Structure formats: structure tokens, C-alpha cells
Length: 82
Image (tube, rainbow, N blue to C red; front, top):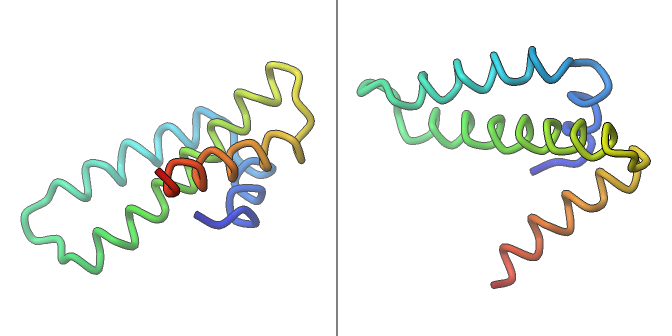
């Protein structure tokens, strides 16, 4: 997870475009010929896209962009600490 990447995706992509990209990446990960390294890269991209989607949802619900980004980062870090 990289907050600058999530910010960039949030600022430059619509939720619909992010959802479409997410669908493609998830399908890519299911191919039998995909290496572990490729899955790791796709997984990082999926995490960043999911973060951007969550930021979109939080901003649409009234949160400031900075607060939405920080909330997502804290959520991820909190799940790692468990």
C-alpha cells in the first residue's frame, strides 16, 4: 500500500474505471501461468485500487480527501497490527 499512489489513483480515475481495472487484475491473478512475482505486483496494485475506491466513497460521504486517505492508511496499519 502506497498512499501517494492511492492519492494519484483517486485524483485521476473515476470509481467506474477503478472497478473495471480491479476486475481485470483479479482475473489476471487467476490464470495458471501467472508467476508468484506477478501475483505480488498485481496484489499491490489491487490494494492501491481498493484504497482509492474507499477514498472515493469516504469523500462522497463528506470526508476531506486528506482525512479519507489517512483513515484508509490507519485501517490497513491497524489490520496488520492484529
